[in-house]
Length: 437
Image 1 (tube, one colour):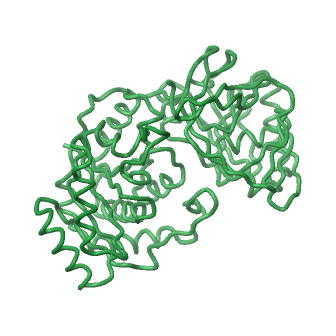
Image 2 (cartoon, rainbow, N blue to C red):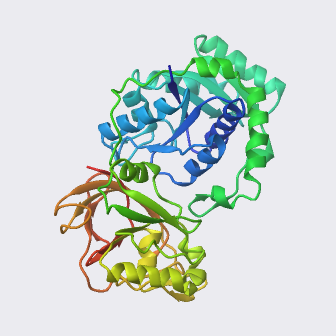
């Protein structure tokens, strides 16, 4: 019977991503059927998961997803793997808004998967036992079953940690103590880690990490701690309504932020998906009745995109035949008239929506969003509700005329006004949709 474990941490930057990747790669090298998930709204870490495990990583979001959506995704993970490793987000009990809902702890309570804490012990020894006692006792419905100490300074440090935990928490399983290694660090940029596809030696990094971490962790005990989810298995989820029956999806390093659950939901509902690369100057399939431009890093490739005539002409042709065209975040910017890059240079974009954006003066927009459709269209009827998130550094210089796409609010329900634009069957916004509400 397959089962899952959640690798969480007391705080961000504890090393849980690298440890998760190392474990995924180790189990894959050993021939185990392995699958992974990532808690919360994240595109970059799941791409690393996929490279480590060889199969797509699914996001599980306890704030933005309905219970039935999570149940369907969990069932699909457990069907395809003997072990599911789910990486948490931020600290175990860090959630959205004032209430803190949607935390990794909430996901653990919902799924029934036990939690292994990854604790960065650089700068502490005996205090780790007090920290662990607090996390274990904080919520009875969140079972913390083991701990992996990360960035351990040496044998003496390891002995102090083990002694303090054995004395204070004799029932807690110490699964391993991973020493500090500079080579276990990954490069970062403004939205998080540099994308997996851009890593110069990703396979080498994953193999080295797997060797180091597997030598420091009791993998047999780790796998024995996994448990099958307590959620009733459900069929495939459809988080976002079908945009069409033949959907062309942009896919390259400039348009990499598409949730696998959304794409698989469309496939399960009978859609045919084709991929194309705007950076390679590819156009959407000429018979596509819908085009999806996900988010990513178009601001890093604006000059190339502006000069890719086949890509831009293909978008124009799709709009002319009244195909649905939907852009999220970076995809929304490319549907606009122009994009100003970080150096201040303006690049002409597709010109299908009245939008001008700029990275010359960066301003971070970050948070969960509630969204309500302001007019009927491919995404649903007027008033259809969604949950999603926003994370970008772009500044809107002008959204021109045209009709707004969504009315939005933050995680606490505070009104954030209208967002996005729609013109005929072309539409987009800075929101990344996660699920229907």
